[in-house]
Length: 278
Image (tube, rainbow, N blue to C red; front, side):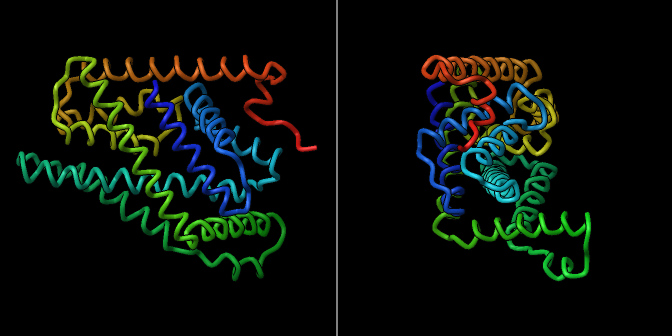
């Protein structure tokens, strides 16, 4: 639970750095609060609902536009998937070198993610040229997409901030590896470090298909498909799922109760959607 709180803190720093790019300054406590609220929404509701809570909160309190918020969310997923996929590819290469255990399907999967994320980082669609020729509803959509891409450009062009985001993402992976290592030991499963890292990276990229609360069932399905590569049986995968989700659920409920206890004037609606900026 303590390590997960550190992960929430890093996720909060990610929010803080991306908002700073748009000249929106928030404190570390508030960024930690936003990261925690997002986690609660993502774990208890489907379709990554935590992002909706965070977007509405920032819109109400800081007048942060939805197009710019999507740019920050876009950046989070690109950096998160890129770092996880790169680490996973390195691990697969090491496993092939030291243990002669090749996993071509997994290698191709992670390579596609890396290439795809790099294209999204550097590719720019010329919305400005098209907007001049359109009007009405299509014009509004294209204008929104244009603002969204320009917001992402701001993040990428701030090299110092972009590198910081990469380091934060790597720190996030390292802490998650530590969590997984402890969970493996808790169920009496002794595996080498490379399998622990690979398990962590597969868990991370399973968020690509996050239509259920906390990717429930989807992440476990990914582990079942790749069970040979990570050296886990079906029973061990289910044990890890119960342990990890149980700990996370208890921690998030504890965080929610703590927030309500220390600020009794807050309602659940204000916690998730923020107060009106008056």
